[in-house]
Image 1 (cartoon, helix red, strand yellow):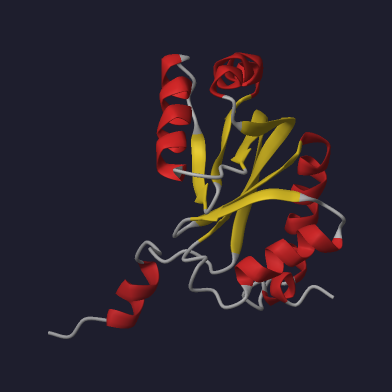
Image 2: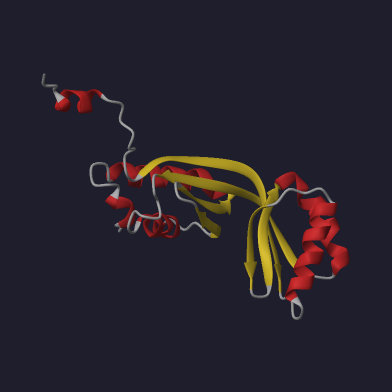
Length: 175
């Protein structure tokens, strides 16, 4: 008894997703926080900052440590509460309000040669200042000014669509 494997394989559910950018999402309502210029005992100051944030009941995301400080984002409505929590510590900090997150979804984005660089290139080429970039296995995110977020998302979608059939190579080859 023979079976037609070709037919069975082609009628199966497709498990592998299309390579390249699959969608772009924008989330508004954040503030970007930078604590910097910590001259001595950086670890102790980081602990004080994180304790103050926790005591104020503020949720943080995208925490990044730098040689002389740290950065993270908070819900926009918590910016004033955070400022009140950090001022008594005497640390140098800034809070940039009206930030949005642009999430770019792509299967195995880290393995797609040049895709992340191409997406960041698209942002910079369009005059968008990026405050933060992060990536995961299936997406990258950029923290940008609220006024630029929707425009960036649209530009990534347009550039990505131009690359259909080429693994979205146009995103990485943008100009």
